[in-house]
Image (spheres, rainbow, N blue to C red):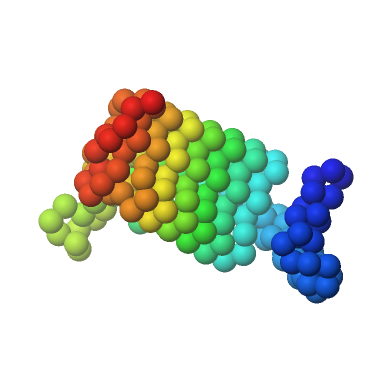
Length: 196
C-alpha cells in the first residue's frame, strides 16, 4: 500500500492537483491493460514466472521458444523473433527490457539476472554469411548477470558472450566477445574504456 501512496504523491507533485485527477483514470486503465496483456502472453509462452509485466505492443513471433523467470519487465513495442523454430530465449530474474528493443534469438540467447536493456537495443544471433538468401546460421549468445545496455546499442552475431557487470555505452556496437568482468565498453566497434 505504501508503494501506491508514493506513486500518487509523485504524480500529484509532478502534475498538480487538478491534472492529477484528470490523469489518474488514464493511468489506472493503462495499468489494467498492461496486466491483462501480461496474463494473455502467460498463456502462450513456454514458461512465465511471477510478477512479469509485458506492455502493450510487445510481439513474440515464437512464444513457445520464450522462457521468462520472475520480476521481468518488457517495454512496449519490443519484438522477439527467430528465423528458425528452435531458437530459444531465456530471461532470468529481474531482467528489464526497455521499449522498442528488437531481439533475434535464432541462435539461443540467455539474458542473465539483473540485466537492463535500455530503449532501442538490437541483438542479433544468426548470420547468413555472404549470401543473404542462404539458411540462417545460429550463433548463441550469453549475457551474464548485472549488465546494462545503453540506449541504441547493438550486439552483432559475432558476439557470443558478455561478462557479468558490463556496462555498454549508448550507441555502441558489440562485435566480439567480452570476457573481462566489471568493465565499461563503448564505441563502434566497442572496446573496453574503463575498469571498475
